[in-house]
Every structure is written in C-alpha cells, then in structure tokens.
Image (cartoon, rainbow, N blue to C red; front, top):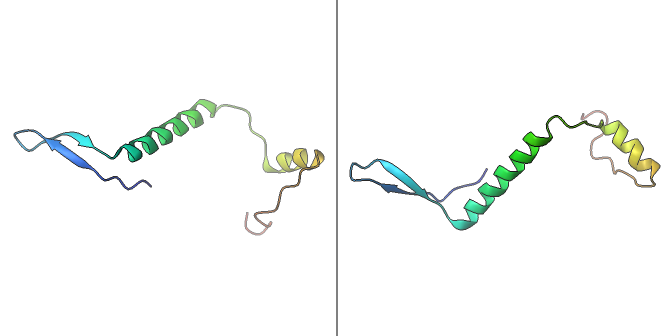
Length: 73
C-alpha cells in the first residue's frame, strides 16, 4: 500500500476542500488505477489453467521453475 504524504487545503470553516500529494505518489496512484482498469477490462477474457500453461511452455522447450510444490498449493 502506498504511504501518502497528504496535505489538505481547508476553507474558512476548516473543512477540507482539496488534497496535495507529492507528484511521485500521484504517478503511482495513476499507474495503480490504470492496472485496475486493465484487470476490469480483461475480466471476461478466456483463462488458461496453470497446468495448461506449463504444458504449453514445456512443449516449446521452455521450462517453468517450480515455485510451489504440490503441498503448498
């Protein structure tokens, strides 16, 4: 999670009306928002099981290094 260095602009009544965040953190938020939009856009795309992916890649001479053993999945 991003730690934001927030600063607020308040009106005469002390109500928060705007937020100032560092530019770098703003860019990170934009990237995260874009990533979420891509996930939402692709939600209905066809999927491939991990087993199918392994077979497909191993058939092309590529090898997937086991990250999990059968007991951890």
